[in-house]
Image 1 (cartoon, rainbow, N blue to C red):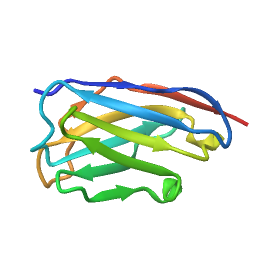
Image 2 (image 1 turned 120 degrees about the vertical axis):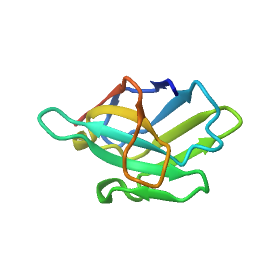
Image 3 (image 1 turned 45 degrees about the horizontal axis):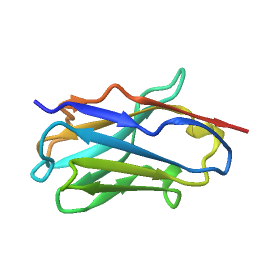
Image 4 (image 1 turned 180 degrees about the vertical axis):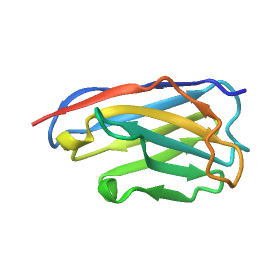
Length: 118
């Protein structure tokens, strides 16, 4: 079992930046993929970005060019650098672990609130 703890959320003005961190309770070296999800009020949860053990990344279209996902295997952490934030990025952001090539994420963090004011 892997426990995940997110940090780094907060209130920021549009155009600003935040860096989210996700600390895992176990080694992430062999974890197939780690992802960042978000859920905005009244909307479904969506996958924002993921990064595989090999370093391959995916971004949803709305954040391409603004967000960057990275992982530090030595620290068992995954990061989401968010630049040029927009009010529509306001959501609870959660990290999650995917253990295999299917699309199911098995472990989730509690989430951290990101609020972008206009």
